[in-house]
Length: 611
Ligand code: AGP
Image 1 (tube, rainbow, N blue to C red):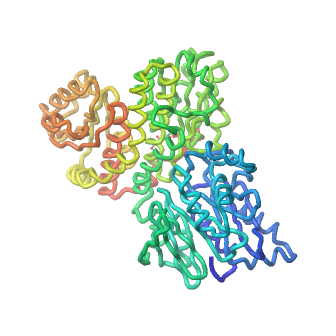
Image 2 (tube, rainbow, N blue to C red):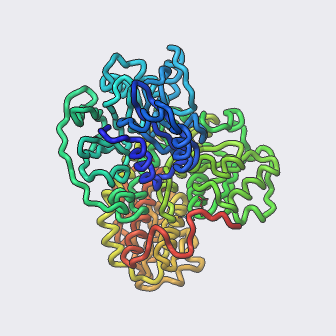
Image 3 (cartoon, rainbow, N blue to C red):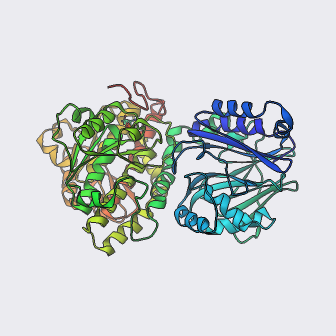
């Protein structure tokens, strides 16, 4: 909101947010008592072309061009297909209220039902459009109060900004978890998901905190809490350059994405755990009867996605007692596997474009199996090669070494395991509810883990970054964690690293140990912790330097390992989603100490589309 024509400013701001990933975009500006909105699927040049097309000549075009208040958005689809109708900004029935939203409205289905019963007509499949109609329901001439009333009815992770055709010099925003920040310019104010959007215009920023509502009008900026009490907030000066801004102030995209893991899990489980005692996978096109009767599950994937599948196998077999077969996709597709009707094949691929995983999924489908894709990218090939899709919601991942997409995939596997258990009644309602509540607590426990282990991991990295070989050991549900931890180290530090099922040690690999070998042991709580402790003693007896990942409060591990890094307590099956964090950080700091480019390691591509 300002005095300069804003549409070009807004589209230029979106261009600075392209690194966040998107599949469609839109801009709405208000002038002369009406709102002009343009949306387009694909990249911003499509939006620019659409804007161009609408503003050739005539009075309206002039008004649009001179409009000084507007909102703009790049969409990373989570609810609803990649279409122009689902692109933001979204409007209410009167087309006088427009909103842009980042995040997820968890209770969108309930609210939609109520609003439709009141006569509201929806024009998109999105959860976000709810907000425009809620504001419409509460609007009595004061947009801030209408937003406040709507805010109190919404549940989820989101930040949104609204404008009204009747109040052209006004913007009102609200924040719950998802980022929202104000840019204070000279006679103009920006609201954005991230600083790069307005960094070229101003370096004066004001943080909008969780649960706050921000009003921008001719008098300036006003922040109030959910009850309407005014909140004082300092203006800060941003010193970052554009590159640092894109990384959210972190030195690399990988570190930024490690810190985005709590949100990635929170958004992936968001509206799928509507209550504390059931799992809602209604956005996944697999009916309950089919899931209740499925005879076997086969998981195919590559790299990090394969490791997420391995965690999923333990959870599904433990909770739902369905037999799960795992295979590396590049092996599975040439194995002439015995597969057919009655089998559910789960293809896990964050990019949705990995050739071997796609081929394995197609092979399964050709043989009559049903295929479920677990992917992070709407519109990707995997969504077309599958009968059903369970989307993770980690947002675009730029760092080649997968981090936030891994924890989001593991969360998706937990959702699938719990839903199968619920439908097959293989868990008591109390046990199911216990696990649902525990899973809901994981995002904040990941946050706690990142904060609590960082300094310790940094110190361990400093004392080991020049090692020429690492061995990772894990057992039972700790095995996929050690495989993933080792892959991270290999990918970004290029140090030869082996990862092994701890029980296999004495059958060969133990020969490689000498007094300097660092051995990373995943020793979180599990039914085989005793065994893991004796494996740690086994390698220590050969003088190796043991670094153990343990569950907080289980002092036993610290008694046997040279160094122990603790992660917060949770049900043992959920421990992998926490235990991977210190291993991501260990690989990260070792690579940084060796001055390697962690975001773009040598010889590696983010998406492997070749056979
Ligand atoms: C992981 O850090 C690597 N980037 C790589 O192993 C990756 O997991 C693998 O290529 C699979 O990618 P996908 O999940 O996109 O299919």
